[in-house]
Structure formats: structure tokens, C-alpha cells
Length: 388
Image (cartoon, rainbow, N blue to C red; front, side, top):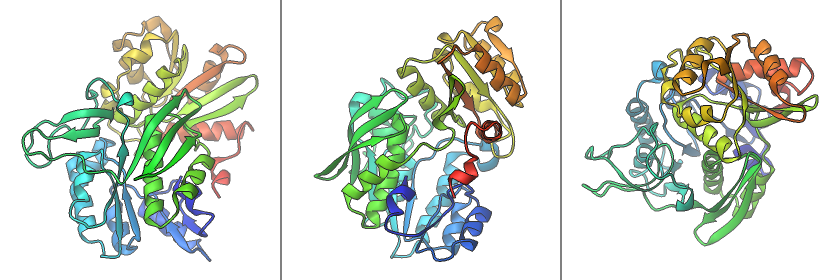
């Protein structure tokens, strides 16, 4: 999203293929002849090293959810590394933070002119804090937060009833959000009184957060709000993020799932759009996925299982995934375990009615393998070609 906004103004050095470790950033720089601006997605653990070697003009910190605990540890560990990174920024660096995340918002309190973004539309708040919420306790005194609105996981409008620590004032906000099934989401992008209506080509509240982060970072670069809105509207779906692929007379809908909070939001968006009766879910445990897959027990699969007639469980940990759905209430006779990803795709397509949609929920490495299968069959261009 940020690349789409900034590319009309700058020739970018951008790790568009998603290689977000130190090696990926270095490779991008090595091939960035003529670039005017570097735009890098950086892995949460790699950020301190990258920021130390490439002092950022703008640093945008999104949110912290539990993800691959066997690699990174608990959120407080990552937040402490980020705090040290923020403390080492030059005075010329501009910080952008997600004010709806208590851990992230606190990182911006020590710097002047920090830009804060968040959602301000209680109509789309949940009735209570989600089960998979992570940062439930005040970062100052440890008291449980009270929420006026909880949007995704622990993201929302929070306040500590004991010490008063609360969400900071928002410099950029999304208001008047309108969800449009699996097709899109619209909202008012507000920088104070400066308001532009934006329609994203991807659905869900979580993508509103993504758009806000990109928009606020671009604002910190001096880009006008109408130009930001046009860039967001142009942004196509990335593979695996609610992307549709036509396969004969059927449509494959790919939705990445990789941690409890993200998976819950994907399922919430899917169910709000009417759900599905046939799905393939693929769980891998490669290094890039996280080898500890216990996170699937924190995903609220129950509502999703209730409207399925058939599930194809696939991937390296297909059996454990099948067990999770069985405990989630799906009858065991409705669950098929097909470890091989390509065979699972074929089985899912076989179960899908003509002109129907097959929902495929893969973890990260399963998503990449699925993209290779789809591209190899000629249904889509290889992802690496599309992002060059």
C-alpha cells in the first residue's frame, strides 16, 4: 500500500517480494540502482539491526500480536527491542505508531511529533475483548484495561481504570467504515478535518489498519491526503491475502492464516460475507511458519466449523489441524486429511460446485507452495514476476 502511494513520486528500492530479514533488505539495496527512496518491510526481530545500519527517515510500527513464539518470544521481549530501536533514532527520524495497540502506542510517547493512527468507529467493535487478545494489561501498572471499543484482538480504544494510561489522540483515523463482504471495504480517511473516502480492494477491519499505517507513513513524508487516498484505492490484493484465482469454472479464494489474531479476523471477515461450506486449510511447521503450532488452539474455529459441510485438512501438520476442528465441533466424517498440498487442492476443487468458490486457508509456507502450484498450472503468473 505504501509503495502504491509513494511510487508516483519516487523511484523506490522496495522489498516487494516480502524478503524482510537483513538479507532481503541488503539484496534490495544491492539491486537498487537509481532509486531515490528506500521502502522496506522489516521483520520484527530484524528491525533493530536494520534501523541501526539504515537510519530511517520514517519508521512505522504497526502492531504486536503473538506470532512464532518459538522464534521471537513473548510480545514484551519484542517491544523492548523496539523501544531500544526508537531510543536510538536520530532527531530527524519521524515515528508513526498504531495508537490502538497499547504496547506500540507507548513507544511513541518519548518522541515529539510522533504520528498516531487508529480506528474510530465503535459500530465495528466486538462485544468484548477477543479470546486471542494479547496486551490485556496496562503497560504502566498491570491493571486490566477497560475498552470502549475492541476492533481486532487487543487493538482498540482502551483505558486503564487505575492509572489512566489510555489510547493517545489520533492524528489519522478511519471512520464510517463499510464492510463489503470479501470484495472490499470503504472508510473515511481522516487527518483532522481533512477527509477522503477510500475504497480498498481487499476486505476486513485488519486491512483498514494496514491502510492507516501506510497512509500515515506517507503523510509523514509530506504526501497530500488526496494523493494518499488514490494510492490506496489502486492497491491490488497481494497473493494469499483474499486473492481470487480462476480455475476453470471455479474460483480459488486464498486467505493467509498465521497467528491467532490474524486468523480470527480472516474468519470473522469470511463469516460476515456468508461463509462457505467447503474449505481447505493447510498447516505447515517450517521455520518461517513457526515450528510450534499450538497457536491453532487459540483460533476461534468453532463458528467456522459450524457452517462447514466438508473440510480438507492439509500440510505437514494436517492431522493436528483435523483434531483441532474435531474438538471445534465438526463431525469427524466431514473431515478429510490430505497432507499433500496439490492433492488437497484437487480434492477441494472436486468438492466445489460449478461456478462456486473454494476457500483455501494456508499458513505462510503453504501459501507459497500453493502459489507455485497455481502458477505451474498456468492459472496465475508467478508471484515473483508480479512484484518486480
